[in-house]
Length: 144
Image (cartoon, rainbow, N blue to C red; front, side, top):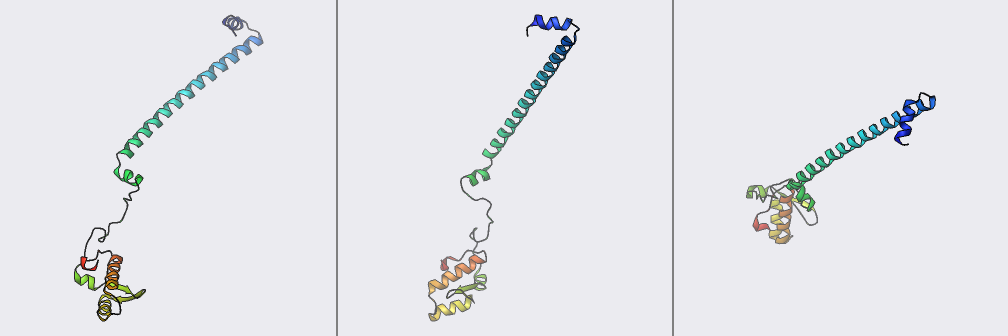
């Protein structure tokens, strides 16, 4: 529709002219609503992009997340064993150990078994290392 026709309808008071003016007004309102929606969408998209940039920056600066992405587990529980804490000998002697396929005995009983040859010294040492590890301790060098 060209401007001459629009002008012609706007000066005409016939029912057809009035219908055309209402249609033009409705179209103009629809166009404004569409422009408002597009503007709101652009604002929302800009906000989301800002959030995404902030998150990416935060992730890049988060050493724990970087480590996890590289496969390094950072949420481990630190035990005295992982820190390398070696208990005093009195604590080692309180340790229960498993020998001969899972029989649980005291440190002294296992030591006696090793002295009489029921188990090897290597089996005794391994049992002590495992017993201490179960309690969260590292074994003294003499048992490794």
